[in-house]
Amino acid sequence: SKPSADNLRSPICCIMGHVDTGKTKLLDCIRRTNVQEGEAGGITQQIGATYFPAENIRERTKELKEDATLRVPGLLVIDTPGHESFANLRSRGSGLCDIAILVVDIMHGLEPQTIESLNLLKMRNTNFIIALNKVDRLYGWKTCPDGPIVKTMKQQSNDVQNEFKMRVKDIINQFQMEGLNTELYYKNKKMGETLSIVPTSAISGEGVPDLLLLLVLWTQQKTMVERFMFSNRVQCTVLEIKVIEGLGTTIDVVLVNGVLHEKDQIVVCGMQGPIVTTIRALLTPHPMKELRIKGSYVHHKEIKAAQGIKITGQGLEHAIPGTALYVVGPDGDLDDAKEAAMED
Ligand code: GTP
Ligand code: MG
Ligand code: NA
Image (tube, rainbow, N blue to C red):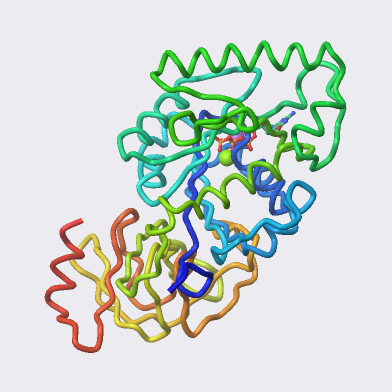
């Protein structure tokens, strides 16, 4: 059957880059939230997850392209920390994703964790788009809130346009030295061979419609779409163990493929051996809200991938972040699941 929202899972997109390039702020701009300002020291210290339904993406991109066909149900975006001490979380985040956004600060160019992120993406053969963020910091920038980038650029003075060109040229050279061909996305005629750069501002939103549209259209290319065909085989990773008032011990997970149900028997890797339990509650934040931020939750009987989910159940306090969650099916073998869980 034709790929559609019924038989496709949502692609998972990981956002990576050097500390303070604006990864969380870009997500705040899309969500219209304020997660970044609530972070201790303005530094992300956990993996985040936010679900963006296709209808919200359409709303945000319609000025750029009114009639874009969106076939995927939505996008699950994984936020990662850029601080050098969280290399393990960057590696975990990049291991979960289908595609990625590499964020580069236009005023700084490539920095140590940009290169580290690049190497993770190269190693896993993950396709990515470059967001060249903080364009509003070019001297004399004229703000065009949420404006498509080409339209916005035309409204800038010659000085701003010249500084922009010079910085872009320099950054393209820096990528070349890492062995990568890159080009502004609206000039890129060889997508696939040449990586696309989307200039953005996370503060005033310029280029954000372009970034979203490019991401979604790209996941719908013939060569990519196979990857997002929905499968019933559960693929799920534990991100965090958290005690939440009123809920007790919960685990935050990313469901990459398959379906989870309330009362499913699950097995996760624990510090003292496999933990066998049943899903008591299956919760998600509201769409466009960050999983790692405490808020109100939506209760589900079942959830299809891809999603960031909070699970409650007995005995989960000793679960180990970064390991896989297994479901014991009606005919499944519990011992096999236990063995698989402890192999992580
Ligand atoms: P880590 O997660 O800690 O690696 O940082 P990050 O990449 O998520 O960056 P964050 O969103 O925390 O932003 C860092 C700082 O840059 C904050 O003070 C933001 O307000 C600022 N910032 C982010 N994006 C932009 C932008 O587009 N323009 C301007 N002027 N400032 C920005
Ligand atoms: Mg951040
Ligand atoms: Na930060």
